[in-house]
Length: 356
Image 1 (cartoon, rainbow, N blue to C red):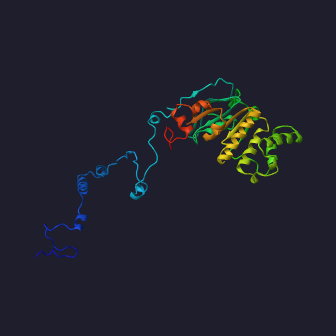
Image 2 (image 1 turned 180 degrees about the vertical axis):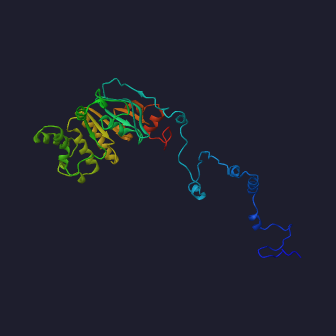
Image 3 (image 1 turned 120 degrees about the vertical axis):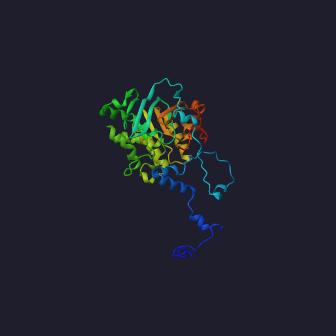
């Protein structure tokens, strides 16, 4: 009798030809494990992990087939709504930037000449060439985050280019000294996104502020100017109200009245339709048209709202990735064969512009 047969901790003797039990299969080393052990015995400990590592398989994008509603949720599968990037953009990110211009002979109110601007490693303007004609309502359109508001800040000298030049009515903004820059800014009126009214002043004093700050006019003359501008935007009845008593649309109109009190040569609108419902956006566009027809000057509207562009734009420049894709009369841009311009101005999903 084998004395080792039933020692404590040993299992009872089993016939070697007896069928394997599930626990035996779990305990047995796999083929990969046996190979790993053999490699370690041969002195290949370092290489063993690499040799027997699971291969890395790169996922291959497959077209998503149409499926019944709820099928994806039932199976637990994740369905992506993002399409593959345009193959042309993989070769050249500026494939659609033809830089075409139409009927731009001048004179120009604003010119960007090869302007580059970066904030740290984030490049915003990357060789921007742009000309804004005098005396028209021009719009700079483009996707969010593409550099539209940065353009405005260069026009008024709040930012200066890292490379290139910005001209306002023929004057180089980066080369102006402080006094001349201050005088140049008086040629501008600016309507900010939220109106940027002073909360501690009533509507009348908000509109009168630029006149009191930058001119020597008396209060009677200031009152005549302020009342005329408030009347243009339909806010005479609200002249004694404070900004927190005004609706969003009223604050926009008040901001426009204040932008016009110095009779500026150039009026800048930084997304004036932001936060407004479609009806009030249409009314604001109508107001811009009427005020421009009465006062003249150069109006530059920064926006990504295509409906506003159709209503008021005479000239359009499409900005993308820090450069102009195409610019020219609004009618020609809305009929452009350029795939990016056509996609952006029609709001279609198919085209070079994706979710990236």
